[in-house]
Image (cartoon, rainbow, N blue to C red; front, side, top):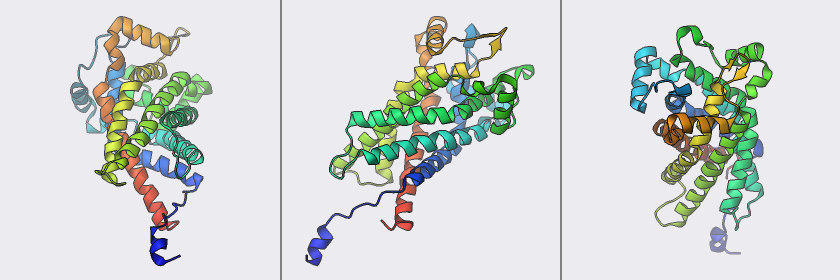
Length: 310
């Protein structure tokens, strides 16, 4: 074979070890959380605003941000950061690791998985990851919601590990998995939409003459993915948020389940309230999707370049 023919042969990309898929995925998610934690806090505050028929605390995202800074200082926007980082370490590590592993297993050089197969892989990854991430999720919800309560009703967790220990001691270890069913439902919706739409959008963009496999392509695919995911997952997310933040009053929980939350919100606050906090939700999910995948793609490329010379 001539040197010219050798140059025309496609270079086979060496797969990243499965263990590193988990590590790189979690690291990318944690890096993205450092930028979007304030939006997560505002989203949670707005989803809890008006709960139980009370007066809605925040009419807009900007009003919520202003109120947090005024009452709690700028650092108040980063309350719960330890829980957010721990959630990414648990949830995103497993989510992207499982997705990458299944994607590679079901792919061939000339035949990547179909869109529906990608969606199925994403749902599987989300369901598995949510089981690992639920304790951190419930800690995050409670820590970000604490500042909206009167001082005598606040839980005052100092960090995510303090929250996990106190929840276990005061309410029982099973409380760490409260809301696990709607969390799994949300995760399945989010991952089916996010991971599948990102992969599909990237594949489409690369098929055009305008994009190459670089940061611009990753950014555009992530923005498309974030928009699809936000529209699909908000009703399930508000159900999850309220269940995980609820208190047991006289031995009775405030909500019986996700369907009960959705029905009560729709009846008492209006059907559009199921999308309450849309702006901060997208402001959080969109950039987080962008940053996670951009960081992940760059980490994957760096790992191949420096560790396996691919």
